[in-house]
Image (cartoon, rainbow, N blue to C red; front, side):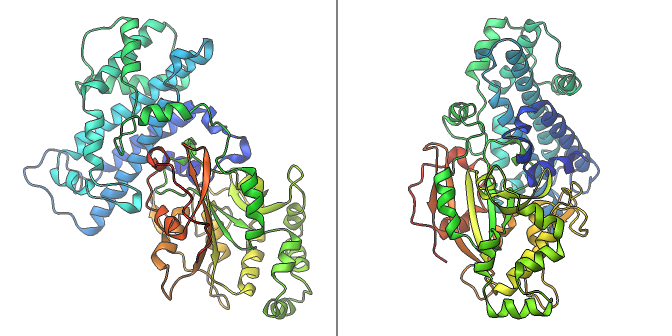
Length: 505
């Protein structure tokens, strides 16, 4: 269940709940991520044919499917561990806070660090039993955004004096604070602390509170993939300043509107959200641009569409929508804070109509256009309206229509059927569920680009850059590589110059 909760947070951003509600509930996030790591270790222990129970003299020779399972499990570990590190870093300035905020921040920081440290050592201990596993994981795995030597970097990051010193320092501070650990964190933090001691790491002399604080400040967390100087300092500079502030500006969103057509696919990313953890890939959210009634009427003014409407007994697409889905159609016409609802997307509140200003207020955004006749795009819109109002699919079951995740809405709106060529978007296994992640849509564009099989055209990409605090228009070439980006791309990317207006196809 924890795996599914984590996936839910990733595929369906909880923007309807407020600017960063989940980032304000770190105790819940830590509990979910800890349980996910526990389940991942249990999965390893239940497969001794892949993950041996004792150290081997000779490495196992794994088959293709077994190797794929090892890599997929590693990718899931990486996503959760990096999320824990980001949360610990976000609360690493606890010594500069005051009162209850200081205490809560310290305990969140400590619990996130203990979990990442403990489970990293548990993972390393299991993987080291077969030296071939480390060799496999040190290969580059672009489908997960993992560069070469990721496992070696992981070991270097956690198996060193600085990490052990940080553990000792945080435990000394915990004793000196003299306050009880919050109940939501207590059991997990205690279990992680005891496991660390059991494994023999972190043993050493007791520290005074002053020395401990100095060590915590001197051993600030740094993103371990890729290792890079000043990453921790950079993360510290942005973690407070940009809560609820998107890199894509309102002016850019206004300029975006005339370039969109009903049926366009939006890929979105918001940085520094805890909800980005769990699903491999750079793009965690997808949405469908449906436009306003006026935009649809203008776009669908087409002879083939008119002929199709005649077969449905309708004289206009809007009348067809209203007749087929009266309640959801009426809902789509209600403005959101005075703004037309131009986007349909599956978020925490379910499949909802939102304004473009709401949906596109992200840090990176890409727009893709299906290479389909207007009649088929009209049919996709009609299908999509039929899903409006359905709940979010926390079971991630693409086989049913009762509830949907964000990418499932795109998949089913354009699913091929009799009389509809649609889009061939393959499903993949993630956490035991067949699904299509938003990142796979970008990957599909990259695979097919320039070939006779190309199904999607590139319209634009606004690429967020944390250093300049802006999103820059970039080219189709840049977008075609974006699916390979790791989750921490925005931390390490240099400030891009706009590489040309993003409009080539």
